[in-house]
Image (cartoon, rainbow, N blue to C red):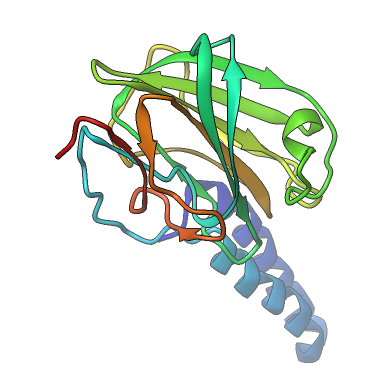
Length: 209
């Protein structure tokens, strides 16, 4: 499957392939190569979501770059754990809801476009934030642009309900996604771990046996 945001790019490249092929078949190889890359980048493979009210799932594919304890006064009002996930251009870039719940907080912040793997990119790059909560817990997710990624896509609005693992957006062409979880949740993610959106468990409620 291809996520809908990739369709305009694919359509343009198909037209370019036909246009160049008409004049000289060899020239069509360039847009054809770009077409293959775009199809690969905007892929949206089907996934069986292991829905569990006790688990916080990864919101993105990629590699866990950092796990830090911080203090949040905007959404949580106390100590929290921030997990940073770096997405290369080869990862699936679809963002999925880590828990089921209602979107109770949204915030967009314009910013710079530093490489997403830089530690301070989260603080100064363009960023979209959503907060999701249900009867058990709440989480916050940051969609952060990178050096190549300059377009954050968010499909919902405040007040919408998300099922666990459902798609809520994406970031185009390389990026970073952060998830912030409350202190009472046990973090099971590890630095350097490769994770998949809607599949990998990053946190578990401490009362789970």
